[in-house]
Image 1 (tube, rainbow, N blue to C red):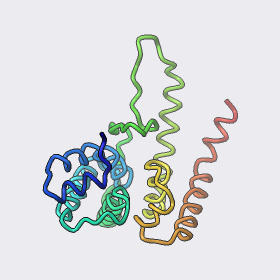
Image 2: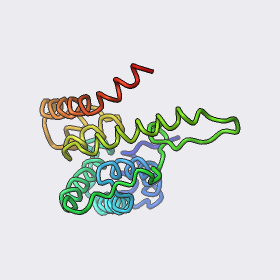
Image 3: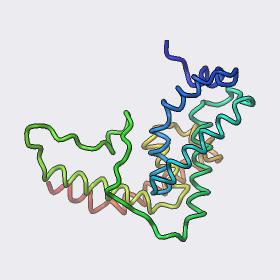
Image 4: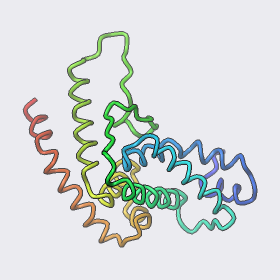
Length: 199
């Protein structure tokens, strides 16, 4: 039987090291992907993910299942990511569009293309790659809090209640945050939409 996140965390609290390993396996990839999209550095994303799990482990004895485990996990991750973005704001933006993204099960958007034996449609693949880069770049340009909200909403598929707890704001404040973010993205990505209409 698959144990829930809360059950695993309660087992960790009771001293079961293996349950912590299971949580790590379950959430490491989505967490690193989320952090990478926030801080745009693979190395920093890995370091921050390690710090998130370290904080979860340190807090195990005080853990109370009052909120969903993912809400707690992503609140820690978001706070660390926002601090990291602010700390590194003036460093040269390290955007390596060719850096491989760790593909997680839910994230078809970033999955690396597996080349089959028959010749894939190279042109379509290139168009898809350009589109993905444009979308990533547009999300990167959003203010940090809007970026976090969009990533949690679209990529992590969390609901408004969870995201507002993570970002520590009301649901109505979150909705206007997301509205502004999606409005910015709509304007930014208008050429992309126009292009796909032509084809």
